[in-house]
Image 1 (cartoon, rainbow, N blue to C red):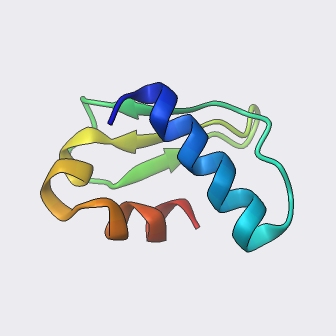
Image 2 (spheres, one colour):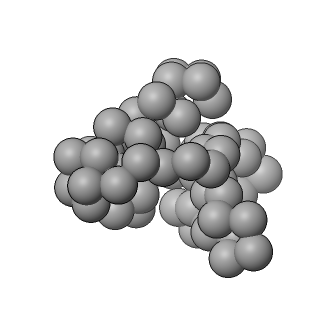
Length: 66
């Protein structure tokens, strides 16, 4: 999965579970090691740990996104 696919996936999750479009950026960050992801309150962007995705799979990352 690349950043564009992650962006599309986050947008789909947002519509399906929250009923709102996600109009910000979602990207992978390969430097994150001890956390699954992080949220930036000022911009509303999110970063997902590539290591967490590759280790724990998409089901766990979906829970992080939610």
